[in-house]
Image 1: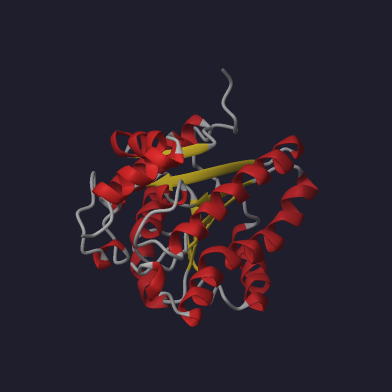
Image 2: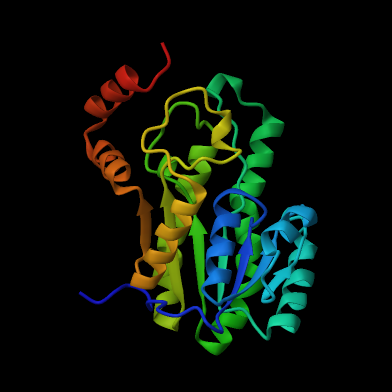
Length: 259
């Protein structure tokens, strides 16, 4: 069967804008693509950490900005296009997370997580898609999570935002693929980052950010739509999500809900 997207066999000369590149999966993926020969624009709020990620890579562009500032998206995009000559792939990797049960959620905290995880992606898409559609090429990669596969405890706001991103990536593919654009959905399992360091529970198949970056690069090279990893964990989560609600709820309550 043909891949759903154009496989990216070579990164030489490819121009990537990676949003959320200062730490974790974003930083590791940025360094992986820079080593592979891509020109990578690194964006996040913290310029000092972006400079650390870019160190030693002449083709890195340090492009800090606040993703919650809607006007700043257009300004930064114009700067990156001016320096790189264009953008071939945008990776939306910025995320906010705190482990919380439903009764712990605050209106202010929920609004912030929704704005970072979901609202910023819509702002970014509105910024980059007109150029890509005009030329009939380019792609977007949306980093969601296996937490978006179903409702899970401790992910009271984070999980629903990731479920929305999965839905968004699916509809984007239907809209954009016939117009020549690629859409990639990245669903990691547990990856050791500052976000998951907050978790007080055991995290099965915990991976390093570097392993996650390699898995993402491999999925892009294969032209996959959904890139999920590690499969020894994500496949089981997919199977759990396919069970009837009565059985699924019973298993989640028995194995995942803190006693």
